[in-house]
Amino acid sequence: MADTSTASSDQAIQNRQQALLWRLLAACFGQGEKAQNLESLSKEIAQELSLPELVLDPMVSITTLLQRHPDLRPLFETPLPGAVLDEESQDGAAIASGSPSPAERVSASASSSPTDQLKRTVVLSKLLLNAFGPATQTKTVTAQQYSQWTQDLGTLEGAFGYPPGALRGRGAGTGPGGGRRLISEEELRRGFQGMENELVRRMELREVLKDSRLASKLQPSIALVEQLLADKSNLSGPALDNAKKLIRAYVDQLAEVLKLQVQKASKGKSDRSVPPKRVFRNLDLKRTLWKNLTNWNPEEERLYVDRLIYRRTATKTQPTRLLVVVDQSGSMVDAMVQSTILASIFAGLPKVDVHLIAFDTRVLDLTPWVTDPFEVLLRTQLGGGTLIRQALIEASKKIVEPKNTAMVVISDFYEGGSDQELLDYIKGLKDSGVHFIPVGALQSSGYFSVSEFFRTRLAELGMPILHGAVNKLIHQLRYLLN
Image: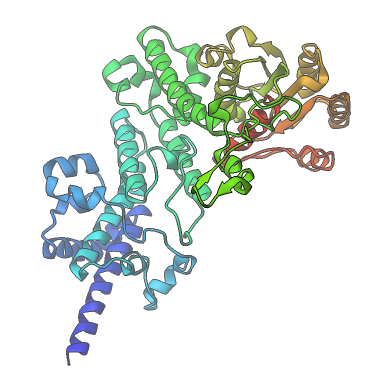
């Protein structure tokens, strides 16, 4: 009899979880008015759990909710147990047919009571509702709405174990470990970045920028930087000043992330031609002990050391010239921002001579400002066509010693001239000894198209076009420049 009662209770909890999730789907797809029964049932569930009705309101920010009900803070700030969902939950029909729902999978790994599990489902619903719900679907977007959305998304990131900004592509944040995901981290980040682009597009940005109070509510992001760079010629006075502050803030934030990645990257192979420096910090204790084990005196219980082993720490230190050639067309704004910051970081390394060149149908030498990515971005003019070969010809004039030159070309490789002539020119650079590194995208954010002709041909030549995480480029450059 007890087993029957327990099963009935479990089924009741599952039914309530499913109702909350169906209500979430209805709200996210703008069908809330047609699902009033789910709305009423959700309010009853909140009352049963002694939760305020505000926890169901998609127009109330999580910050406001927690300010009014601080007792809810532990629920929102503790990572969700088992937050990684598996692929079987992709089929919405599985929920209706009685198969385990996402909420059941979320709560299954938690050793909490059914009531606590149901509360966590309410929290999950609120987090997703604020990230995808009605607040993101208004015809126009205010600075306050955008700021609220980014803050709510930050709470969602924390609940799922992501570092701040990871789901908007700020930095190389890694998600929660273990298990399988309903969708990949790349797809999730792509979706949120697409949403952010749309929110910024619907915002009356020029009017917001004129008011310093409203402008201060904006959260720096790549979507916002793209809009500001594209519209900077139409801004003046306080609006231009506020735009510059936002661009500077984003550049500084991203620079800190990329600096850490450069520092963590491998530093190339040791130079075997240089003997190890015989100083204490280079002493290899493990190898020294191993090589001297034959000198162990069992009677005295002492190890006599007659040979010291030192690590080789010297690396190749030939001066290297780094030529960064970046497409400044509108579709390449993300790469433009990251490449200018990377160029400035590498320009600060010893024995690296960095040159930065931007191009569309014209070629612009930005080397004098390479140490200040903010100034570089202000001097670029996004948009226009693409003449890659012309840019490479101009960049080649800076080559002194081909074997000590690394040329990074960041573009979608849709050439405005002849594809074959550009390919022949690239082959000539490679044959001369230049380390040619083609890059299609510096991070996997949003849809990115690259010329299939060059994707195939450059791979055949042993120079596949890099794309995805910026770490790939950083590791290649650190290896070449040391």
